[in-house]
Structure formats: structure tokens, C-alpha cells
Length: 383
Image (cartoon, one colour):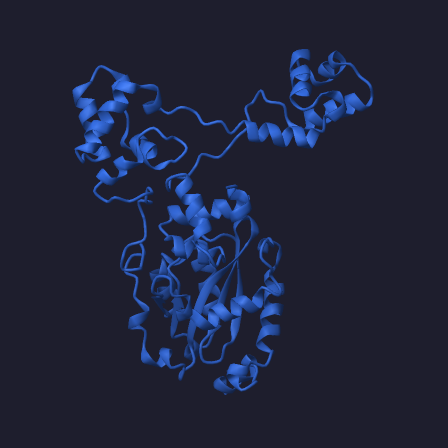
């Protein structure tokens, strides 16, 4: 089974996936944040590496680069010999010769194909510490079978073999050997001896069972005022980040009573940047439109107390896997995909353009408002 064909996550999406996982989001929330209907693709990527962020791949310093391969291709087209091509590249003739042999010879050589194949060939797994040291592997497996934790095993090894570095390793190395499928060193059955019995390494700031993650003093949506629930009073907002390529985002706010939308440019999704951008826009609203904000459990709102202090707007957080609790915002984000399609870099749009799109949405008749426009409904509220 070829994972790429099934999952189809771009490099930037994979980077965001791992960032969200390290931030403590659950698989369902990650899938929703990446706008994937099926969370199985997210799970496969995480499970393949045992929930442990893979190291970024890098080319070896001595490896041929794409521009050098293109120079080889040009040399072949010009009829140059291997030694002539090597001199132009300041490389050994044997390096050029091996490159051509690997990729079909002079007649079949194509620089881009050769570079892609070389990149794939470089993905050979390196033998980990436990794979190289049989005695150490046996000791670790023995203690895991006794239901010792990896931390206990690591500490015991340091005390038992203080002078033998080959018999010592960190608890993280043990976790990697258990969880990362590519290693295949310790039998998968040993995972059952872990107290948690989990199949993947969880982030230290992982999502808690109460659904509010590691956000300090988060207030559940269940404590939101009744006036916000029945949409009878204006000033209660729903918010989220609309995601684009290259880990770019736009903050979206929708007022529950009028469905009036605001789009806010954010230069990154760290909590300081998002809070500053949101507070700047919300402070411009009249007091009667500043009552509450309902957000999902994204870490971008971790500093919600500072937002409340700056705007006098209380923040409430949704239950896990419950996007319908921000139904107006979810619907608006769907409408926005007409202007900001998936896979588009959102950093190219200035605030003025975002304001233009928001105005277009706010002047569009809405069935839920009896085909009144959000802008007209808001104007009536403020009179």
C-alpha cells in the first residue's frame, strides 16, 4: 500500500500536522484543522512514526545537487567526456561515471529524474542503538516484560552499568524503539506491558480528557450565557483560523445574531500574534458588540486571558470534535473557500483585500436571515 497515494498530504500540511500534534491536539482536531473529513490519513502519518516527530530530511553535504546534475545533462548534450564534465563541476570523474551508471547511462540520463531517485534512495533506515547491541536489547525487553516503565529501565541501567556506556540509553530511545514502525527492534507485543498501553508517543502537552487541552483556565462552552445560545442578543462571536498553504492562516470572526463576518490577517498562528491581531480589531467594535467569543481548542487562543483583559470579551471553548458548536463560523469558512481555495498561500493577501471579501459576504442575502444581508441586520442593531 503506497501511503502517498492514500493520504496526499503536502510537505507544508505534514509540517502543520506535526506542529499541531506537538501542541497537544487530538487526531480529530488535527484532521479538522487541516480540513480533512477522514481522520484516518492523519492517524496513518502519526502511527508510521509512533507519534514521534521525524527528523527533517537533509541532503548529505557531499551529494550531487540538482544544478550539478543539470550541468551533467548539458555536458552530455554537448558531447563532453566524463572527465570534461567532472572538471566543470570540480568533481572526481568517478563521481560523474557512477551517477550516469545509476541512472541509465548517457542516453537515458535526465537531471530531474536522477535527482528525485537519489532523494528517494537516501531514505534508508539507520540501525538504532538497540538494534546494534543485542545484550542491551535483551535487558530492555526483559524489564518491559516485567512492566517497568522506560524511565525506570533507563535509570536502572545507569546504576547497574555505570562504567559501560554501551549498556546505557535514554527512555526516549526505548519509546522510539517501541513506537516507530520502521525500527522493528522490540516486539510490538511489548507495548502491551506499558502502563498506558498506548500505541503512539503522546506530546507532553497532549489534549486532556476534559477536551480543553493544556489551555490554562479554559472555560467550557457549556458555561456560555443563555443569550449567546439563543442568538437573541448581538455581540456574541464565533472564531477560528482558516488555513492555507505554507502554514498560513486568516482569522475569521462571525457574529451569531447578525452573521456579520470579519477577516483578520495574522502573520503566524502563535498565540501572541493571533491575540494581538484579534484584540486590535475587536477593540474597534462598539461595547454592545463585545460580549463573548467562542473558539475551538486551538493553542492559538492559549493566552485568552490577555485577550479578555484587552477587549472585555470573555472566551469560551468548544467541546472536543464538536465543530457544529461554532456552526455560523464553520459555514462562513466554507463560503470563504470560494475566495481562498485550499492549497493557496494566504500570506499574499493584504488586510485591505480581506476587508473587501468580508464586505462582499456581509452584503450577500442570507436565507437564515430571511434573505436580509448581515450588514443590514447589523446596521439595524446599532441604530
